[in-house]
Image (tube, rainbow, N blue to C red; front, top):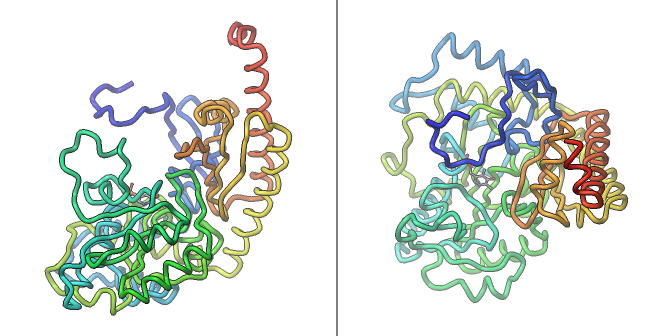
Length: 402
Ligand SMILES: *Cc1c(COP(=O)(O)O)cnc(C)c1O
């Protein structure tokens, strides 16, 4: 493998040369059913014709101009995102971590603009993930990610997810807001109970705190609603989006109410690339598709079907799968053995999945997945589980056959 890339990833020796819909073709010609979606990014699958056309046409006109000028495509995308959500204003960035940096800054600035500059601390949850920048790492407090990178940025406290009494204890006079993912994706597909989210909302209202959602993974239909907060029945004040919003084109966005964003005046934040016409064309094209009548119903139908079929597989292979969890098309298989064992066995069956914390294998198919593709994936999962069971019974024979 190429040795000139910083070895920050433990990559699989596999490369793809093209994709179409839910399918990826490797450089050796093998076809894979892609239920990893570039880590929940390719919401519309690969090479979606409408997105490809929008990007191509925009690239021919103008790709980048900077935020020194008005960007009509961005004004349009912001207006559409606000019409679809609780938000009044949008800031565009280029990634999930950047979106979350913006969210953190908006929360702090709100308190400062409100006469409470001493309120700068944000409460986050154990097992969360918010990105790999220094602030977002400090927010998630994952020791593995922070080790060796110097002093941890101040301003974040943490409580166990689901424990409202612990949250109350962790809130102090310096607390500015609470930040949570509607479903912890990287943390192991851990679903936030709606009652807990409602209790957080009530607590924020009572104490003058902002409620911020990290919807980088859950937003844009992943849970069967446009945004995860709609699934929870709780409205945040600020929210970060990224992954599915560009469906493969890098985009991040912070959405906020006008009240929450009132401190964000000219000069308070910025990005050279954020919101450039090419990215905005991609985002608008994605919204064209996901807002079509019936799209979310399709996601919900596929999610229900997939979950039912996965429950059957779990019953057939209890020594491999301990639990099926998740919401919508963000599904986790908690493994009995190491999750890498299942992910490798799935890849041998030409089904792509992605790991998550808590020993979970994540299945995050494109939202355009069909019932036939789900059946195909379930058959591959069945065979992969059977292969693991055989391998455990006769490890030597299996090894000799390879
Ligand atoms: C992926 C992810 C991020 C980070 O996004 P990047 O684009 O990798 O910076 C942040 N929060 C959540 C919930 C994510 O799933």
